[in-house]
Image (cartoon, rainbow, N blue to C red; front, side, top):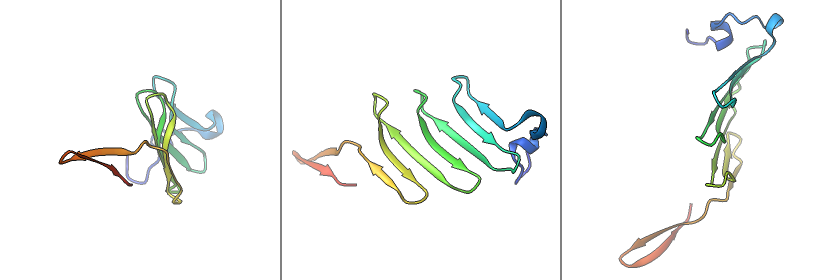
Length: 102
């Protein structure tokens, strides 16, 4: 694949015949999409199938974290929105406990 070349271009994807391009992983999670206008998006997922990262051709991105029950505990995007519901991190130093503040 050449620089500046989309996956659709590399595959010689015929959007008129086949429609939009979608690539999924073995768990059927969407990992890439592309439209005929050369816009695209890429996704990453954790081992549970939760979406952890997204970026698109406009440089918009999102990051997510999840707890062990699959609940979203952190969200951040390229527009500056942050939602942090992670539990506080406690450290111990010289026998005293401290809560780290993000």
